[in-house]
Length: 307
Image (cartoon, rainbow, N blue to C red; front, side, top):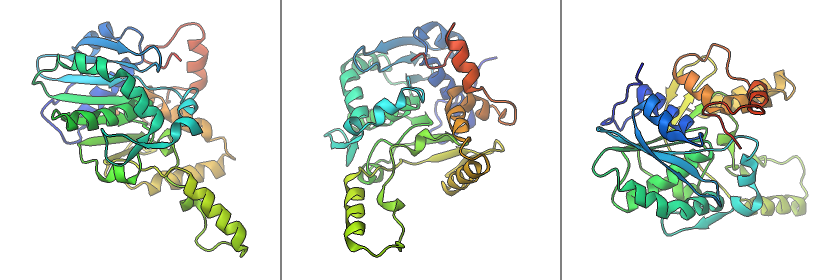
C-alpha cells in the first residue's frame, strides 16, 4: 500500500511525517535507489562522501522531491560530540554559530549536493534525516534558503542540537523536530552547563563558585530550532510540545529503574520506532536494541544503521 504524501503542505502532517520517516530509514541503506522506488515511488540518486561518511539520496517524482540524509546510531554518535567537533563556529552560510563537526561534514559534500539538486527543478523539495542526518538537513535548509531555493519543509527525527541561541533565533523555516518518547540524542550537545548550576548554591565559597561559572561559560551553549513535535509514552503526537514532560518522564523512569531506562533512550532513538510511533503502534512492542545488534552481526537490517 502506497504511503500518502501531501507535497503542497508546509504545515506539520502525520502522513508527511510518516513518508519522510521512511525516507530517513531508506537513507541508511548502502543502495537506497531500489528501495526508494519501491517504497516511496521516487527515482533516486545516491550520494556519499568517503571522508566524512555523509550519505543519503535525492528522490524525485512528478509531484515532489525529497533529500534524505543518513544518520548515525548511538554507537558512533559520540564521535560527533567530542570536544574537537562539538565547538561552535561562525560560518558565513548561517546566522549565529553552528556545530563545527556537522557543518564541516556538510561543507565537504556540498558540491555533490548542488549538482544533484539540479534534478529538482521547480518541484516542491522536502528535507529529512534521522539523528545526525536531521542535523545535516537543518543546516542544508539554511544554505538552500540563503541561495533563494528554500525547501517546503524539513522533518527531522531524533536530531541533536546544531547551533547556538542566535542561530535558532534567526531560523524561521518550516521545520518539524520529532522526538520519540525518551530518545536521549536530542538532548545533545548540552544546551548550557550554566543552567545546571543551582540558583542558590549550598556552599558560599566564592572562589569555587567563580570557577564553576567560569567552566560553565567555556562550554558551548546550544539551542533547538522550532517546531518541537513529541511522541509521548501513550503514542500521542503533540505539536508545539513543551519539553518539560520529556524531562519529567526521563527523571521518573531513571529513578524507577535505577538508571536502566538509559536502554529505553537508545531503543526510542531507532528510526524504526519513530515509524512505529507515527503509525500509531507505539503501544506494541518496539524494536529492541539487543535484537537489532544481534541480527546485524550476520545480516544488516533494512533501513537500520550499518556502522
